Amino acid sequence: MTSEAPRSTDPDDLARALQASRPGWVVLWRPWARSFWAFPCWITDDPRPVEARRAGDLLSLMAETEAADAAHRREPVG
Image (cartoon, rainbow, N blue to C red; front, side, top):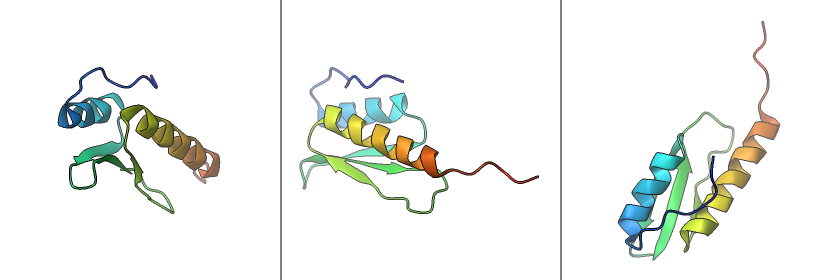
């Protein structure tokens, strides 16, 4: 996966491109907050959304969330 932010300047387009590039996430542009918001869509003990004003920063937070969750995943029993 790439950590490079999409090149469009339209926030809605950026949110769609981020979501398309990162399976397992719902990504929205929140115009009232002027920020991007991403929610992990996998089963986890603590499904917290991440939020950032810039697309590149959001990608970094998403990667950190994925890494933290992978560190806590358990192998299936049986």
